[in-house]
Length: 180
Image (cartoon, one colour):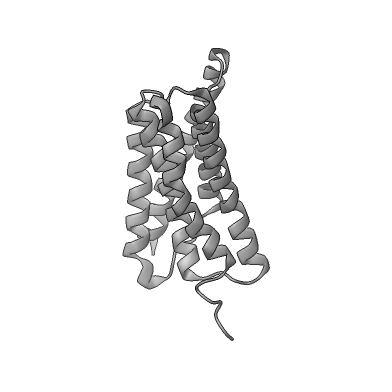
C-alpha cells in the first residue's frame, strides 16, 4: 500500500489558504478599514479561503489523498485565517477583544495539544470541531461585512453560538487526550 504524495491538490489548496490570508487582511484594513467596498472584498477573500477548506477535504477523501501533513495543516490554516480576521476586527473595534482572546486561546491550546500527542497519531477534527469552525467562520464573516444595524443582534447571537461551540469542543479535545 502506498501513501499519498505530500504535494497533492488538497495540500496545495491548504497551503494556498495560508498564502491568501495576508491579502484578505490587506483588504480588511484598506482605507482604514471603514471602506465598505474593501470590507466586501475582504469578506469575499475570507469566504474563498473557507470554501477551499471545504474542497480540500472533499478532494482528499474522494481521491484517497489524505496525508498526516494535510490532517495537521488543514486546521492550522483554519486557525490562521480565523485568527487573522478576528485580530483585525478587534484592532478596528468591530469585535470585542475578549471574544478574540477566548477563541484564540482555545485554538492555540488545542493546536499545542495536538502537537504534544502527535507521536501517538494525529487527532483529526471532530464533527463538533467542524461545526465550531463553520460557526466561527460565518460569525466572523458577519462582522467583516458592512451589515445594517438591525442585523447586529442576529450576528451577535451567531457569534455567541460559535463561542459556546468553541468552549465545549475545546474541553472535548482535552478530555479525549487525558482519557488515553
